[in-house]
Image (cartoon, rainbow over all chains, first blue to last red; front, side, top):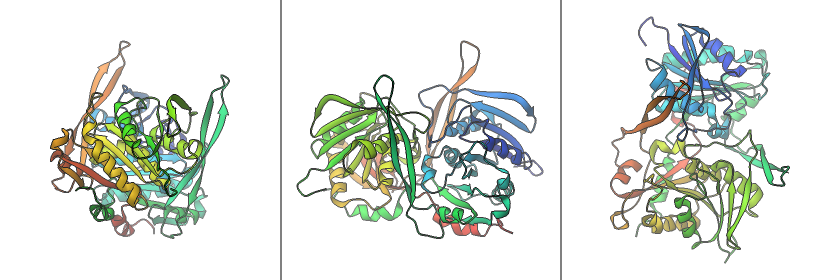
Length: 261
Length: 261
């Protein structure tokens, strides 16, 4: 970023460009810098880090509200596609930050691995762009995003000021609470939790069985330094996330296995 | 697993149930245990850890070749969906191991985050099932999987014998080499590499622009302990992968930021 230049902010999400969460995030980002939105044209929840390899991608400028400091593009692809096409085809320079969300629903704990919101942030991270995914623990389309405003602004400004270590992006989750009941921000680790699925089995009018995925979230982690614990206690959780997935501690153990004669 | 009982092996992939890679893997697994295949009905490459939240799922028994020790199901969902539905709806007990692949193409290094093959293994891992993703560095449908046979068998048997640490699955990649040129197995870390995308921009017959995603793989990692290095030098790479994505080293640094007044 040049001196006196406003930061260039790439905004995306996985709920689609019309979702209330991204509209709120755009409003906040316009107070901080020049905003380019490139977001999916339809909801992409649960897309994980999917990319579009076997289909073409559309990415169309939306001219409503367009001005020099605010452009929006609607993309037929996944959140990770949006970041890739932004960097290579749409933006004239590398953005100073990429923000993704605000997601309607939690991306805390193990949810991070299924999250399209976080995959956009991770994709930006692999390209050397500081990145943050924001999520609110409220799935409703009518969710109230106003209590997140000051925190989103503060965290974004701190990342713009300090940068992030190479290979790290931030996973930020907000409790579903009124503004006055949110106690502050906690840096956390990802809680050790998992989903126990339940499939709702039905039969279609042609007699073929099909299933709907449902499930319960099980948090077996008793730690007080986790995202789950702090969210339940009224804090905004910030988890630094890495995309070197190597379990370094396990390498030595595997070297003792009888794999080579 | 009860004494004298054969191991129950769940087989899946992301190239679809008819791909030569999974057919080869099934053949190997039938020498080791009872095999249940639950795999996508069509190719799912690049699906990352996607799950199906907004659509119904079909999962149909394929009766060809069915016998007591070998059943196959074709699923309309993603690789992660296949593992979820396997555990909850199809299998009568928790499988002793889940193997995914053999993928047509590399899942080494940063490719792991885009990989449907590995997402199936990770999904199994979150459910406490020892899991391995296998991939061959050859995208061709006519790829020769024969050179992988002894290694796939050995690694699977070692995991059945030793188990895997909690929260860890294996990412195994094979060089595209004749059997006699493969030098053995190396335990590795994920190389620090990334993709530089290039979009092939075209115009459709209606005059609307669209893009195809292409790109070049850039490995900036000079280490000799990486998967990329060892694959290039004729070894099978085994990387232990974790799904606690917390960048633990960064927590202290972030605690020094000015996030709370």
